[in-house]
Image (cartoon, rainbow, N blue to C red; front, side):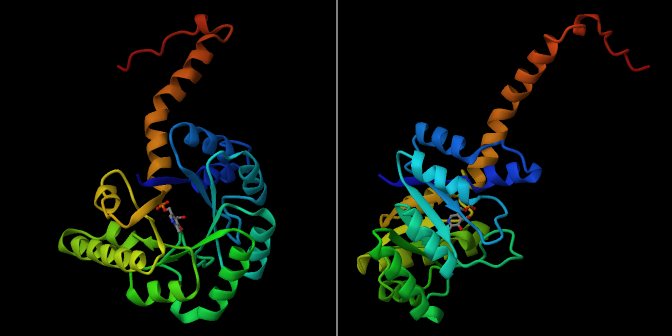
Length: 251
Ligand code: PXP
């Protein structure tokens, strides 16, 4: 059965919007595990816009499934991961201005740097995956880099419509097949939601999907009524509330 990794970055996005303590991505990760998540994914970005180092350290201590740390290929992050020892690490490209990860890692253009970083972390017992576009050259370069897995970037498929979507799905299928034939474990992720996930989940070579934004967005929708009811119930208990006059009808 396919594994579901839940990316809780955007729980931290909401927290950081107020520099508050809630919502706590660690608490949400534990609830996600209870609901059947097979792993938790976080991206510790250089700009620390959402997940913070402390979150990752707490997740490392408290998760029962596995921690997948997404990270840029930088000496500082490699050192951090080496110390933290997540179960898995996924190298992703990172640009400061981007809204989210845009495009896969260009493994073919940075072979040596990536191979060295992969060796370093895998030598420390961390399984490394490389987040790549569904292209033959990137899959082959990932194999040569010695990675345990590739995470195929599904964003182009998710953003496409009509015939273009079918074409993009074909590219994901072909890349997944090629990667599997080379002995790489095959993951997928980015942009997947309740409407577009099934064709990707049905690709036989894919054993893991990492999904974040759509699940966090859905959690807000399915949770808002209860959250409002709880606050309303509390206000109804406030002393004096029973004297409050009802709002006058609009003329
Ligand atoms: N996989 C990778 C490598 C990512 O960078 C991201 C986004 O952080 C995801 C999966 C999850 O993407 P989404 O939030 O669109 O589900």
